[in-house]
Image (tube, rainbow, N blue to C red; front, side, top):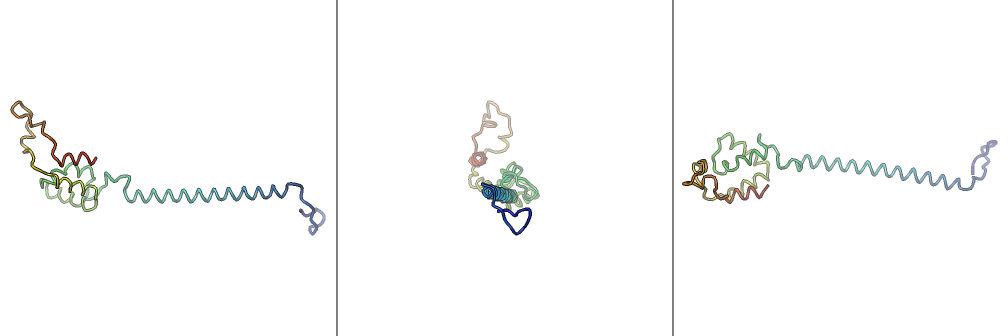
Length: 151
């Protein structure tokens, strides 16, 4: 019922279907509001997850910087580190990196466990000749295989 134009206290009957239209508009408005709320919650959740992953370092885990070195730099000097062939400053940087980066620490530990007898450096630096075919064609050492498998 609607109020009449003459007297606000009297109500007239609604047109057929008018109440249904009002109910449908109210339901539609309610659905739109629910969709907006769901979109806001979903967006906030995704932002929260992205921030958490960024903070945790999943996106850049293989190149995290700790101790002034990134993972790639640590892996470049890993063999020298395992063989105690770095300067004191380099060793300090690698130690600082390994204290915070479990991935690199695990790789270095695997290298230490797999390090076996190696071909002397002077032989490796020589150019291959008929007399010394090992200079460039030596077999891979266990730690080198482990390092290659970790990538």
